[in-house]
Length: 488
Image (tube, rainbow, N blue to C red; front, side, top):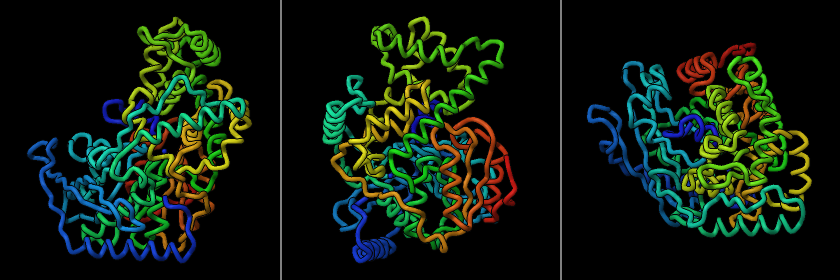
C-alpha cells in the first residue's frame, strides 16, 4: 500500500480498488466495447521519444497514449505516460514485463528513467531479459494527475467515531473532500479501468502476452487484469497481497492485528539492542496521551494522536527504519514529535489526495457506516498500542460516504483455469498485508505457489528478502514455480 513508500523512499516513494457489478449480459457488452477500442488502437503506433529527465545515453523511451476515460462507454479521454526500457541483451529477451510498485498514487514510468534506480528496483537479470514497460496509472504522476482542492487529512475529523453523530460528521467530511477532487478521469480511477489501460498498451506494443509484477496495491491491479485478460498473461507475480475477496470491515480488523504484530516485533528488536532504550508500549501510550493534551509539537504545530499513529505505521513498513523509529519515539517523549509527524503520508497532501481518490473507488464501504463504532472498538481491542489504527482503517474510514460507489465487490478469484502458473509472495510479519490474506489467495488459485518468507517489512520486493526476490526473478524468466516446500 502507500505507507511503505512514504517511509522508505521519501524522495522516491517505496509498500494499497469500477461501474457497479453488472449482469452477465452487460459485462459482455463492456468486454465487447473494450475489444473494439483495442482493435482501433492496434492500427496506431506509439511515438517513442527521449524521456526529458533521463540521461542522454540511457536507452529508455517515453510516450503518451490516449485511452477512453470510461471504458464501458468509450467516452472521454485520458492521456497515459508510459516508459519502455528495452532488454539489455536482445539475444536473451523473454518478452515484455509490466509492473506496479504499489500505492495507489505512485507512477511506474519514473522508475525506468534513471539507470541506477531502475537497476536497484528491478535488478540486472530482469533488465537484461525483459523489455520493461512502466505505466503511470490514470490520475497519477504523468497521466493527468487528479487534483483535490481540500486536504484528505483533517486533524479535526475523528476517524474512530464513537456514535451516530460522529459517523455522520465523518461521512460529511469524506464527501466534501471527494467533491473537491477533479480531473479528466476523476470518476474512473479504479483498478478495472487501469487494467483496461494496461491491455490497451499491450495491444499497441504488438505483444500477445505480458508478464506482470504487482507489489502491494499492485496486487489489486494484477488481480483486476488477471480476471479480465487471463490468457494475455505469460507470468504473474503478486507480492504483499491485498485480499480482494474480503469486505472492508474484515480487512481493517485483519490489518489492525498485523500492525500490533509489527509493533510487537519492533519492541522485541528494541529489547535486543543495547542502544535502543525504549519501552515501546509505554512510549506509544505516553506519546499519544501527550498528543491528546496538546503537548506534542512539530515546530509550533500540535501533533495529533492520529498523526503519531500514521507516522509510526510508516516507520514499521521496514526493519531498516527501526533505529529511526526508536530515535523518533525518544524525541517524542520529550515533546518533539517532528520526526514522527513528518514520516506519515498525510504530510504529502497531493499524494495523499490521489491515494484516497483512487482507493475509494476500489474498496466498497457501503453498509459499513453503521458498524464503524463497533468495528473501532474491536480494532482497539486487537491492536491497543496504536489504538486500532492501520492503513486499512485509514482507507475504510476515509471512504465511508464516498459519492462515487466502489465498482469492485468482494468475490473469490475468477477465471483461474486460464491463468498461468502464478507466484504469490508473503512475509510472515507484514504490517500492511498480513500473511493470512496470501494464504486465502493461495486456496483460491489452484495453479499457484505461495512463497513464504520469514521476517519483518512490507513486501519482499525489492529490498526485504533476497531469497524471495531471487525466486521471483527465476520464475519471471523461466515461468517455473519454486518447489512447494520452498521457504525463504
